[in-house]
Image 1 (cartoon, helix red, strand yellow):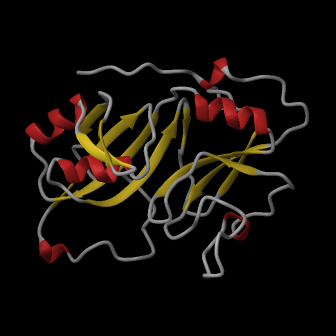
Image 2 (image 1 turned 120 degrees about the vertical axis):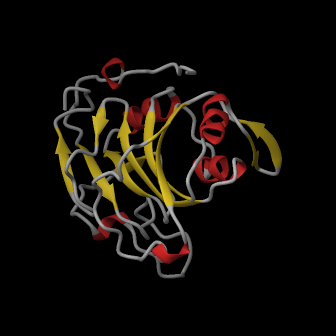
Length: 207
């Protein structure tokens, strides 16, 4: 199986200097930001918790993706986490019974479009989950089960192109129905429910 170069969050941890850090289960339909980009009404992170001033999301999840999002008041820490090759693991529900051939293609890299240009994704960790993961129910119905079976897979990336996983599963013939990030480095979503926030003493894998 292909391997990835993992950077531990322990390597990035520095004294907090009174900064605050959080982890959040971002719900479906929320933007990973505090300030709207247009006049169109969108759900923002500030609706979920009384975050301190200057809190920023470390990276992002699309509005239709869910799961683990790290936040901090430390701009330098945010930059370090975003610029390092830290593993991010996702549980992905796809349309249909995914094949071993499709899983192999995901592991070895597939061609997707990035900013209008062809891009070959890096080798990654990917495997089919034996059972549906225990995740909070999503507010919006995903699909009528009468439309056929679905599969759940785990995909771990050290890169993060725009809508990369959705493009990857589509490239091997299986559309993504639900996408939930469950881990960033050594920090896991654990038992958080959608919209719940937990305070982190520091960005450290022991947390």
